[in-house]
Every structure is written in structure tokens, then in C-alpha cells.
Amino acid sequence: MYNFLVSTHSILRWILAILLILTILYAAVGRVQKKPFKQTRIFSLVSLIVLHLQFILGLILYFVSPKVIFSSSSMKAPLTRFFLVEHLIAMLIAIVLITIGFSSAKRILDETKKYNRILVYYIIGFLIILAAIPWPFYNLGTDWL
Image 1 (tube, rainbow, N blue to C red):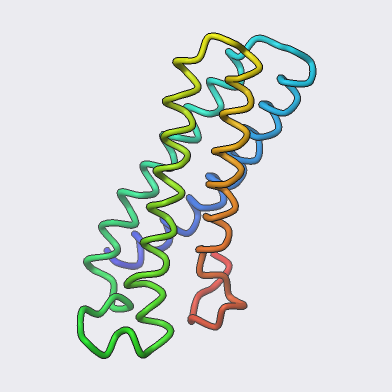
Image 2: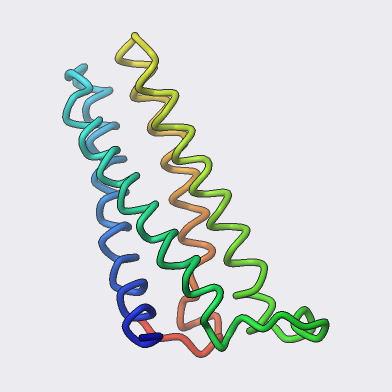
């Protein structure tokens, strides 16, 4: 079960990354070309749903992973500290930012301001996500998939 969760969580990050990139691109193009917000809203909503699904999987993993150790010595080891604190906090911040961006954009009436809201919040959230992913070059015992 653990291996299935880890694999699903890892594969879903690539799907989420593609969706976030597409959402940001659609918002940028839509803003410049002054297109209706509908297409960007669909992409931003799908990205938000996948992001929350990824969070649920990550939360389950948080409590069943052997890499998350709840002890006083966890903060001294880079591997356990990353998964116990750093990864979780950064991802929570990104999720909150992207959720706020989507929720506030849908209430704005001006199309340009909607695009701006999505662009700012989704770009910042995406950059935080990229920084908090346990990439193989972080030497945390992770792989590309």
C-alpha cells in the first residue's frame, strides 16, 4: 500500500506541474489577448482539484511513511526534517496561496484583475511547490518518479 501511495503521489506531481504551467500560460495569453476568463477558469479549477487530491495523498503518506519520524532527533537529520517539517509547511503554503488565488479570482468582475490574481497566486504557489519537491539532487533518497 505504501509503495502505491508513493508512486501515485510522485506521478501526480508531474500531472499537477503540467496543469499549473498550462493554467499560468492560459492566464498570461488570456490577459494579453483580452479573452474571456472561462477557459482559464476551467484550467485553474482542474489544477486546484488535482492540487487538493495531491494534498490528501501527501497527508496520508505523512502518517504512514517511514521517512516521517516523530521524535526529538528528527530535526537533526536532513532527511527526516525535510519530510517532517519543510516539505509539509511549504506545500501547505502553496496550497493555501493557490486556493486563495482561485477563490478570490472567481469573485472579481474585471477580467484583467481575474487574470492578474490567478497569475500572481499560481506562479508563487508553483514556485514554492517546485522548491519543496524532494528532487533527486537534494540527496534525500528520492527518484524522478
